[in-house]
Length: 292
Image 1 (tube, rainbow, N blue to C red):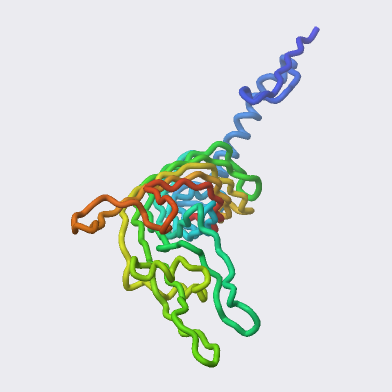
Image 2 (cartoon, rainbow, N blue to C red):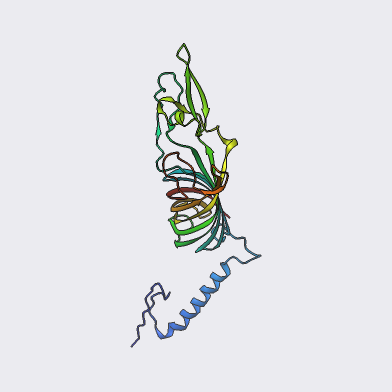
């Protein structure tokens, strides 16, 4: 009589099913040891066999990101140190604009036919931009294969952010010639021209983005954000990822009041609507780059 021993494969015990006869047991062990020896001989050894792209453990990552958020857009440069397949340390430099929730672009009534009047935002005092340097951590939830699948990770980051306000210029109508031509001036908002700047019938249109860069002000602050990252690049050495997240910016500045005293100021984006220290946004960002 022969005894039948059967082992089944599962995710924890890597035994292949086999049937043992007493006289073949020793032969099976010998074959197994020989197979392990062959596999060990085929593994790349440092200094002997060149590593292939599938064997390389990546340590660095670089990507460029294009972001759209609920109140603007931005661009970023991202440098990553890969500590292991589950954890990354990130450094990100980002430039973006942030709009006031009440900003509404409208068309000038004088824009018709060959007229070149630009659309404008009524009641806007400044355009607001921010430059941030964020340090963060990314942790992998679900990894992918070398050439397919989607890597899912969650992340958080924080760092200093420099807010910059640039005066918003409008082309204002001050007179009309005998031939019906408008006499206009490109001006930012002041208390002296408020009756023109806030009169829709005297606004010819927006002056353009080139105006106001010689009169910027700074509002230092902090940015904190977090979210999820989905990388679906065909090859692991490439970065092709969609980032979905939530970011919070806090900015404040020092300005002089009418008495000449310094006071802490909110970011003055709009003239008549409430401005704020705090900016919260949802965003989507596409990152493209490589690992090495």
